[in-house]
Length: 78
Image (cartoon, rainbow, N blue to C red):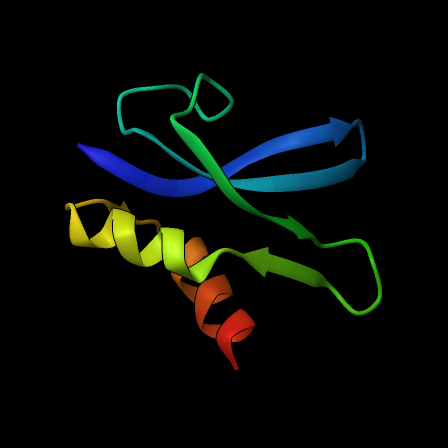
C-alpha cells in the first residue's frame, strides 16, 4: 500500500521533515517514491509546504495519508 507520511532529515535535536510518498512496508527513513513537501517544526512560525496538486494525485490513485500529514495538510491549506 502506498502512503503519504513524514520522513526525518536534519541532525540530532534539529529535526526537519519531508512529506514523502512511499510504500507502507518501508522504514520511516527508508527509500521513497516522491517528495511532495517539507515541514520545519523549529522555525517560528512553523513552516509547512505541501504541493497540493501532487497530494491530490496520490490520493486519487489510492495513497493513504498518515494522521500527522493529514493535520499538516489541513493547516497548510488554510
